[in-house]
Image (cartoon, rainbow, N blue to C red; front, top):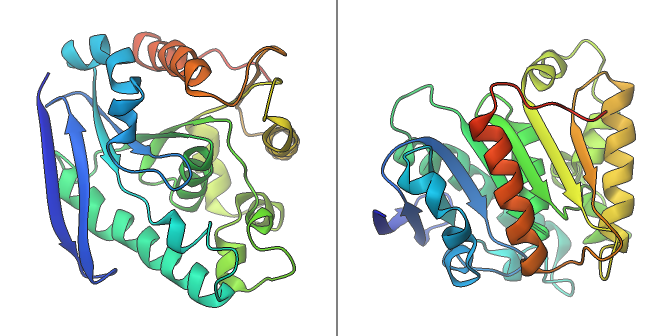
Length: 252
């Protein structure tokens, strides 16, 4: 497997940022780490190993990015506006700097994925910029920003809260048609530590159905916990469906 470590300067964040890639060709998969996680976690928790056969066959290549969650979403005692403003700068670092750097051609589109907080980021990036992503695979994600910003709201919090901005998106907004042409998979367990994620996923399920957006929303069993052991099983299953099936059969 071809593995590359990259470090580059971000003009949006005014700092060096790091990421790793796995595989040299195939459908690009942008991977967000879980809460407060790092770009190397996907390898350390054996998610890369789990997907190695797809990488070795040249079906996919992974781009595992770094987070700044400790300074933004997790800094609950910090200044709210500064936290969300810094997150927005990170959003633009990913969209305007990292994605153009890792693309193999100018209109290449990505699968975007992540677990837990990574699932939130994946959903947020997908619904904000569906032109960049052809598929969303969110595992145990949360889809509203208010969970991290209780009793505070501004335009940036709203813009980074998919459940909120989708509720108020006009029915004739062109993004709705783009969503309907994309592949959306939301998966959540019903076991330990999944309660808040389960409720948020149910809300997104209802919202997407209301707008006629096809999505595969998978509610795993009551033994399926908020844990890497389950995410390894889920990511293998769904990447196999995305890469080895012409059309994902959605369960709506």
